[in-house]
Length: 114
Length: 117
Image 1 (spheres, rainbow over the protein chains, first blue to last red):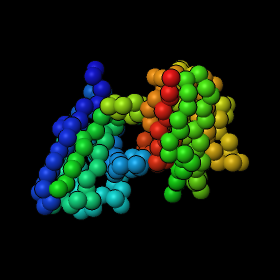
Image 2 (image 1 turned 90 degrees about the vertical axis):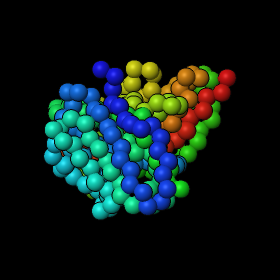
Image 3 (image 1 turned 180 degrees about the horizontal axis):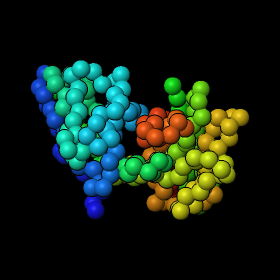
């Protein structure tokens, strides 16, 4: 297994455009997390999936943000009508079902909104 | 809610010197504690964690951290650093409430450790 994969690595877009990121977790992992990291800060939790069910969403996740995980495999994070404040690194992580299993993070997608 | 404060944004040290990266947390409930490391151009990796039991936890590459409940701290230490330890280090907590809360981490701002020859 090659770990958690995120695509694209970089995305540059104009304000107002929609963007979608993809995360492929480690194949046997049922839990999937999205985090956002801005420059000089630690990652911030956005949302969490157990299989295909989205179980928790942060207040940081405005209604312009939507995440899906069809069939409990890969996940997508879509941002509609992007704003300059959305510029950040978007990180995906996955873990197994056992309590206290560690998270494996992907390398992230760097979004720049011009 | 939980919060994490890493007291130093940057720590420069010379090779083979000891280092301590400081982390304090705030929480109204019991927490799990973690240190993650991010090497240049790589994803975050778990370095070590405290879940329960012995308050001193160690990593495979010589780092250790001690959970101090009275001071709400989880400082990371290494007695002798190497050039390869140059990275950004993040302290994180999650609620000790079992199940789904485990992976919902609250991170500190990060500390950039730079080891000079």
